[in-house]
Image 1 (cartoon, helix red, strand yellow):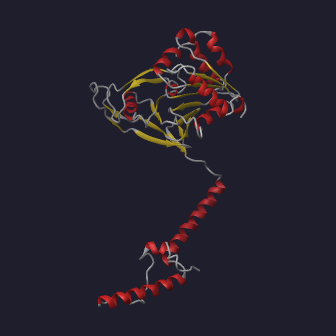
Image 2: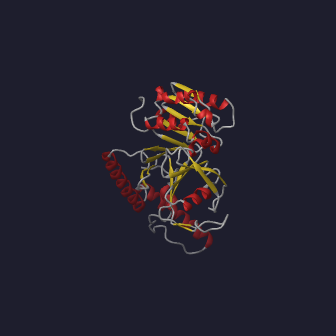
Image 3: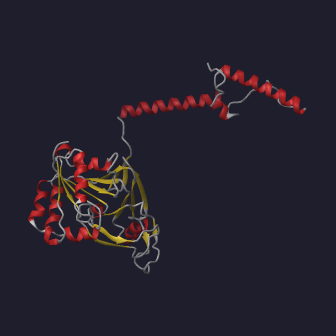
Length: 352
């Protein structure tokens, strides 16, 4: 992949715990979006409580995935974030990656500073900007600062802070299914229906390209659309369950593409060419016809005849033993009378 193509770059909101040992699908996609073999990536571990090790891990990962260079830049306070020495590496970056940790710390250091503006400028000129866990939440204009887990939305379940504003009109949450964060994201949508609630599972990325969201990775991206919601958020008491009626739910696995403006699913899976689709539909129609014929006619004539003989012998033996009247052995065996045997012929009998 070539260097920056012009126009804003891709945004990667990763739900945390991305695979670092096996397929590394999400991180590979980020490197490709950042320029592939020409990628110059700046890792920002400000949210992390870990030391230099976190930079070493991502430096090794991105280098193994083909990036040209990887550097770590860690502003620890707002003074650092206004220091040109910390900002300079961003000017040449084709990718900016923010690690997980404490998102409120990350926001408190970078939002509204020269460093934050440099990240925004890098994205505007075409750099891929991404983050995992805390680094995903800060991409949105309105960032979840903290909150409780749980499936039921409740008043004051979570609190918002200011993010970088790279993702407009949405709230991004992470570790979504794994930490049961349905309630807190839905509570925010109930209180701010104009915002899309976007929850990203672990080892999964919501990739924003213009007005489209694409899903990459092992899990799913859950979207709450509250544009037609009915809620009691304006008067519910503290910690009370919130009414959230009329919310449209989208659960999007890998390969799904979603239109953020019209709030509709655009596609799922790789779409073959129109001619190939027509051939597939024709083949499917032939297969359905064949299945009906098999169900109606049974299997080969020889197998049909053998079945009649075996049925006749079994009937004769049972009638003789029980002294009861049984159906004649010559009665026809209707298709579907013994579905298991019809679909799975006795392998001791040769087929023609």
